[in-house]
Amino acid sequence: MNEQIKIQQLLQRKLTEYQAGNRSYSVRALARKLGMGPGPTAEILQGKRRVSRQIAEKIVDRLQLDPSERTELLRDYPVKLRRNTSASRARAQDLEVLKLNADQFEIISEWTHFAILSLMRLKTFKSDVAWIAQRLGVPGEQARKALLRLQHLGLVQVDRDGVMTRTPQPVRTSDDVLDLSLQRMHQNDMEMAKVKLKELRVDQRDFTNYTFPANPAVLKRAKEIIRKAQDDLEELMADDEASEVFRVCMYLFPLTQAEAKT
Image (cartoon, rainbow, N blue to C red):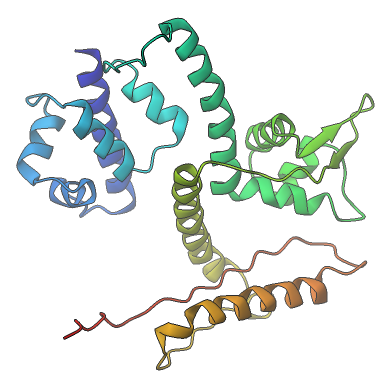
């Protein structure tokens, strides 16, 4: 029954979080997010309906839980082990992969990590957690955890004197983790953009949009142009006099529904 309580508590916690940001957020809205009916969703919230592993996996995918949260939630559900593989060895291997994937997930989805890597390129960078936290406007503990993840994945090195330096080590994840983490990253970017739109003066930011007729067949080329524009912008702004860290977000998506081919 432990797994049932975990699912119930997860949905209760998520519903409370969503309602904190939107008072009109309802169980029906949560049900739509989960891809379930409002009745079954309400019954799970009340502890009146059992949840199978298949439904539990659907719930954690819809809520975009990171790998560690997913494993914690599903660990009490039975899993069929492969033949000739001991349970202890399989579990040890799973935990090692989980540890790596969870760190990678957080680095891609949480902006603080890339911001720290960019800070390290500034001439004024200081190898001090408190300084990093102050420059990014985040709690010290958040900055400390981000640095530990960067170290764990070999993206940052700290010598005996505490001096922090970047390494060229790339971040690689499995495709499913990468896709999920990128979704969360883009969602975080949009939420951050809302805050910056209100906080910053117009001369400190640039928010523009442009709507135009387009041929979807050339979308690949359009993406290449956007990537080139990003590179050109970084080359312009990231010179020897760089003193701040900026983030550029570009969105290109269709507003129309594709017509059915006849």
